[in-house]
Image (tube, rainbow, N blue to C red; front, side, top):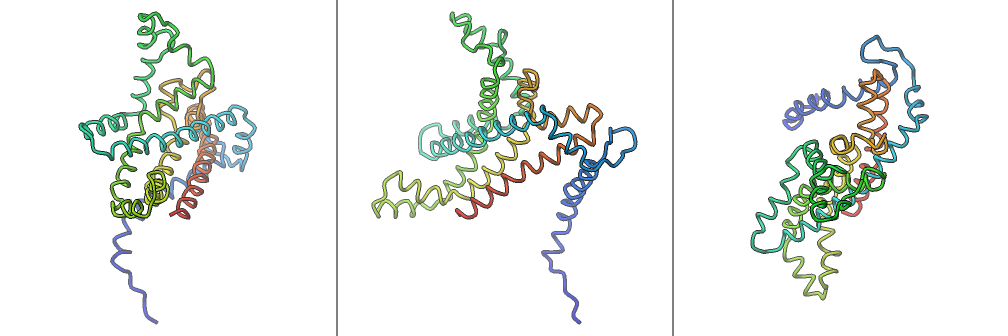
Length: 287
C-alpha cells in the first residue's frame, strides 16, 4: 500500500496551523472548560455544569447589556458601511487635494479608540466640555445639553464617535474595490443605455461584493465586541445603561467571577459568530 506523500503546501502550512491551535483552538477549549466551573481566579475550580449560563440569562443587567450591544452594533455596522462607501465614491473622483482628503479621513483610525474616546469626552462633557464653553461664549449654553441624561442621546454619541473614527478604514477597503473595477464594464453599460443609477446598482455594487463582505464582517465583529469607546466616554453609564457585554465580562472577571465571566465570553462569541456566518452566506450567494 502506497504511503500518501505530504505536499510542500501542507508542510509549509504547519507553522500557521500550530499558531492557530495555540492561540485560538486551545484558548477556546480552555475557555469552554472554565465556563463550566465556579472558578474565582484564586481557589481551585469546581464543576457546576451550565449554572453560569443559566445565571446569565436570569440577570436583568446582562440581558440589558445584550440589548445595548446589539443596538450599538446594528447602528455602527450600517452607518460605517454607508458612510465608508460614500467617502470611497467621493475619493474615487479626480479633484485637487484628493490625497490630503484621504489622509484626513483615514487619520482617526490609527489613533487608539480609548484615546479618541477621551478626546471626545473632553469636547462633549456636559457642563464642562470645550463645546459647552464655546456655546456659552456664543450665548448658547445648551448647545450640547446633557447628552448623558438619556439612553438614546448617549447611544447616539457613542455611535457617532465610533463611525467618525473608523469610517476611513471602511473607505479604504471600498476604495480598493472601486479601483479594481474595469472601466470597460462601466463604459459598456453606458453604451447599452444604462444611466448612472443603473451602472451603480447593476455593475458597481456586484463588483464590490468582496469588499462589502470584508467590511460587513469586520464591522460586525468590532461593533459587537466594543469596549474602548464606551469605557472612555461613559464607562457604561449612566448607571449600567450603556454597558456593553465586553465591559460586563471585564467587571465580572475583576469581581472574582472568572468562571462566570468566561461563560459570558462564550455567549458573546456565539452572538458574534451567528451574524458573521449569516452575512458570509448572504454575500457569497450575491457574489
